[in-house]
Length: 435
Image (tube, rainbow, N blue to C red; front, side, top):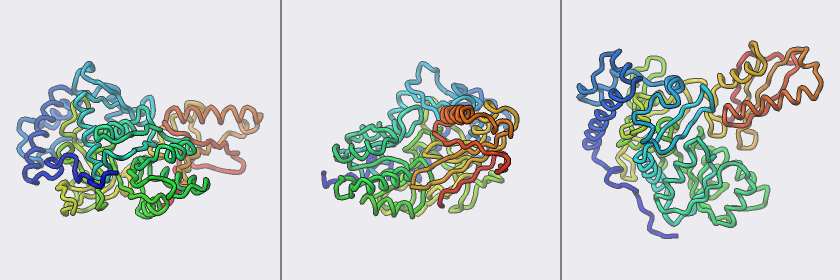
């Protein structure tokens, strides 16, 4: 490994003077608002309803007069209703939130992909990754944007990439040993699951070449970080990127690990009270709202991420001048993150109704028994249905499993409950994971 580790990927942008950054943000915001008003009927209608004229924007504070964009807006407009460019200019599609009505389709132009890879390279370098590293990506490869975003950033940096995808833990360990992986990219819970599997296999950290872990895709704690670092002998950094806003690369920790540096030259952040939607005082926890400043195909204006955080404005010893996000502390809605996948209880309800009809009584239990999330849907059957043959019950359970996995994008266990012994509340969610 090279001893010379670069501090920044784009030093002029990452260490920009704050006044210069504010002016750049204003210029890019003006261009973005004018473009969406001109090219996206949804935004044109929203702006006109409140008589907002993008040409009259004079300061970043003027953005408060613009309506918010919600996840529901994105789902209603999917697949192409919020695109700001013709489909012929889009070179890639990614999607989140499962399939059907819950899906959100994001488009990327050639410039979007280039920008994304560069921002992800920023995050990798901030986390201590160099072109000499071997990066093993254990995110799921597919329509979800996580894996491909990190992949492109690592290649842009010049690192060697192992696109192993998620799951198949034995193979993950085998590749780590044979290919001498130095950087693990995964969810925090999967990193701990790997640590458990390594211990069971008798493979100690000294037998591996790991030195860094870039983690994200779900909330985690400082206690989890300490466990991961101690058990894998790595330095672990946090990374953040809502799928709709771009994917990973929106913000990431440097090696100081005192907050996630936001790419403010590409994203404008607000923190609001989820109840009043008014800005919270500086440093107070609220809901993060993002406006994209450079995205061409799928720009977002005042997008409510539903993630709870606070902004850290104190200078970072690393020299980067961007504001930082404190660790995401929770959600302002009922969405759960299971193995890095966004899961809405309403999606579970829709599948159960489609299969069972009526108003099914069910509960969703999410646990983390051995560092890896496990979701189980308990479904209360009618006495008549529960008296059916075991074969019919197994067929129904397996059908629900398949449909839930297809709709939500993550596997779930299904348990059919006898109403004579267990009474379930309708649609209750029990998140039993340690906090």
